[in-house]
Length: 320
Image (cartoon, rainbow, N blue to C red; front, side):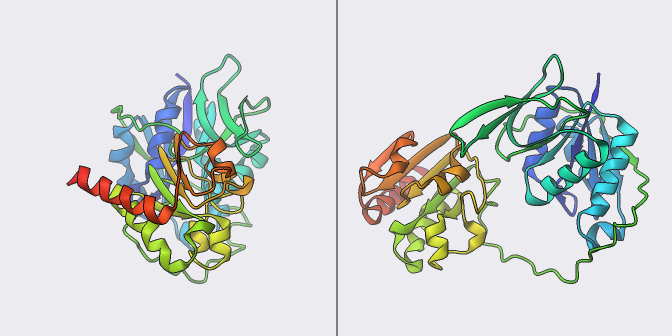
């Protein structure tokens, strides 16, 4: 069976959920071969094998940590040359999408970004995407070269499928431009204890209707009761009520959780572009004419300061 190259997103050997989703999708079109780079790369093998990787290519070098994406592109190209895959899959993070674009340019292939599904086709893999702020769903395939495809988190359920997961060291020759841009410092992000926004199965977001930074405690309380991530609309972020890193929308982050709860968000196209592929959408807004209600699966017309605390209490009661 043809092989599919999967780029592994991990932190010191701990494989992140979007990579396990990629392995599930990769098995639809071939046998997954995983590429893990940097510190802890070899430690990823067990998790990758458990989810279908027939082979795990690993490489570690200071360049992966000390410089920006070019060393990783060099490694992915080396893996591509070694495997000759029918497709290359990467998660749709900002870094991975840059890596994907650079690889596609190098190997003369087409690229598809932010896919939400993947299936085998007669002429190669077919990717499903949401287009024009998720107003349309399209199916696309690359017509030139080996498809390079990035996939949004939460696009597939993680499925275990034990495989051999044989570990092989990959030899990487770094290009002249690999050390052109150096990382001078890193600042660890403060942990909130909540899931990563783009990977969370549930997201609770607040908008202009929250009416102040201090009132986001109501949104956070609901999120914590559900084990959810917290998001914010651009209006809330621009007002300084919540960090930009939590912005959901066209100029923020795109999310595709199983459940998205929007509180005090009108539903401007900018926000809808970042969350419209959510599986189930619930909105709380006191304006019955708010555009968000055209999109939702369930809508509550009411004051979020009354509705959200009641919802939080009900969740806690049912869990307790």
